[in-house]
Length: 402
Ligand code: FEO
Image 1 (tube, rainbow, N blue to C red):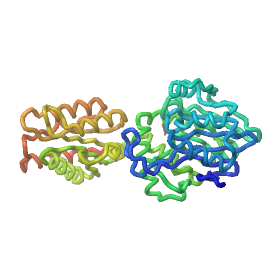
Image 2 (image 1 turned 45 degrees about the vertical axis):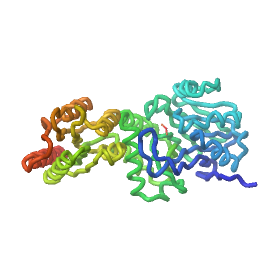
Image 3 (image 1 turned 180 degrees about the vertical axis):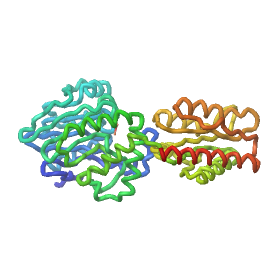
Image 4 (image 1 turned 30 degrees about the horizontal axis):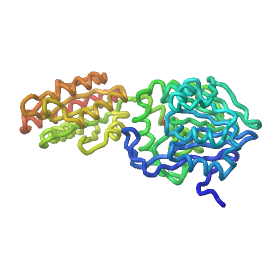
């Protein structure tokens, strides 16, 4: 009888044996409107190796795909490139089913797997540059610490030149197609940036260094196979160039305005600021945080030049949706931004100051003392808001000229 799930051939000796999660809509706070994939790969040499696993509920799907190529107990080695549970949840089941000779992870990975599963499974730690022979082909392991966990590593297969890059170069995108060249480029463009912005931005400096280090090895890379989303087999520079650009976080003339409002006053201020940005020559994206998702704001902040945040004051505080986006953005540690705060209030008016403190904690350079409006903005108040936007737009245009 045929297996219900089938492996997909990547090269002569390598198969995709992962899982498609069509329905995932939240990845610990990151909205995944297009679902995701958990990619695992089976390398069939004289020895058989499984590279990474899938999230726990998809263990049967992965094992079925493996069984469509070889019986799972033919697996000699399992390599875990990254300990996060979307790639290791099914690892204990895979180990139990395959009973491999050895399971490999980086030194930090071996510690992390033990701290996750507490099952006494023996994990063999591998060092940066260590190799593993599969008889007629060879795997090489490269530590990629903080890309994006301390345990992260890449595995390179010499046969076919495949770089198994775990989360790096990935994106949350469920699809029946397995290769990037089969998918809509505009979707790839958005989802690749969204993934970087929401997962990798805090380590952008390290990402640039790690990628330089990997590229300096001059590995004959023909295919990049991440753990989420499509595999790159043509035009690898498409994703490599984007990563270099994302990591640089060079400021542009784009202004991101995020606000929330109680009775529309702060909303009107936001729109007047946006109008001014455009007058000043900048570009602008506006998010009302009662309706927008934090992870889409983060995507817009990647490569932005300014972050302008507004909130009404409620019970002596900024609105909870604004506290949410500020906390999220602070964790992502965006660089090279200027900013400002604004908001309407009835009596206390603390929100603007609280936002300013938060922006300063993010090392965002404030360009204004902040605009506070009592209750409903007048014509002149809105003109002040427009003028603030214009000043920011002009400043970003001048910065862009260098
Ligand atoms: Fe896809 Fe860091 O896990």
